[in-house]
Image (cartoon, rainbow, N blue to C red):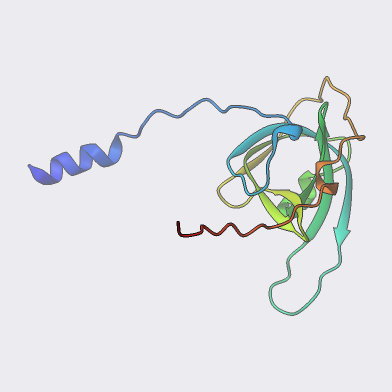
Length: 142
């Protein structure tokens, strides 16, 4: 009887939530779980350095009508992120690189090619050019 209840609990999953799409200018450092629609403006391959696995990396400038951000594409993602392509980035996260934001999609996220965007990319507002500084906050005893 107990194993039957366990099987029912394992097979019933909570209903999936509808994704909430955000805009590039709403992205903050250290945040995760972003879903956004963006157009690839440019893609530049990063030369492979070091030893170990043979990982392909490309830095892609992606954006929407509110701004642009650098997206780090890895391996198979490099083939998808071609200039002019409009993509849905699901469960994207922010990685900090040299105190600036980079958007990335890891194994828990997904990149989907979608129909061409109806917006023009605002290349004037590149949120990856904003440099952030880590501030340590310490509490003083009263």
